[in-house]
Amino acid sequence: MKRVSMSGSPRENVGKKDAKAQRLAGNVVCVLYGGEEQISFTLPEKKFDKIIFTPEVYLIDLEISGKNYVALLQDVQYHPVTDKVLHADFLQVLESKPIIVSMPVVLTGTSIGVVNGGKLTLKMRKLKLKGLFTAIPENIVLDISKLKIGMGIQVKDVKLDNLEILDNPNNLIVSVKTARGIIAEEGEEGEEGDAEAESTEAAAEE
Image (cartoon, rainbow, N blue to C red):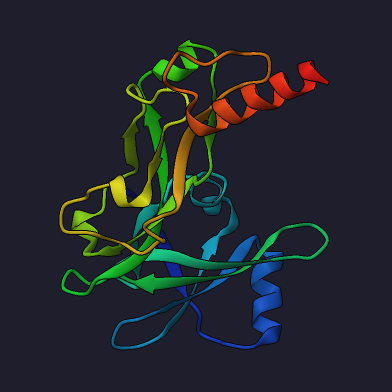
């Protein structure tokens, strides 16, 4: 997984008044949980741009009061009008404890079906994985070069070492379908293509 470092400041006073003051100062009120104790701290609001406005998932090396933690951003609360970040929850990650995280799908290669006029559709942009953070890749790379028209890749087709995929095995991640006005390669249309042909012939007979 990709990593980014952040330095937080511990909150000496926990309450609405202090939270308001922190936000006025350009900070985000945060909580780190999942370890031996829950820690309240703040981070500069500008630090969130890199980890929020991206499909990537980052491991965050947090430094708070001289102590270091590895964490994942779990939840963010926004202002209902301005979309300004108000609060963030971080989950402390331990080397010996599996985590559950949704990682982005990245397609590589050029599909045979697309070259022949098919339409590529990415139905799942992320897959939910469970495992130790050391085994989780930056993203899930799928090679689509062998996909012909009418073919696709399901969750059960994806194999990742030392990781469990929690999504439904039968879910379709990516597929190549016949585009309108395009005739698929012989033998690739399948039942759908045959049904369209029969429908056309019936209309002609009428």
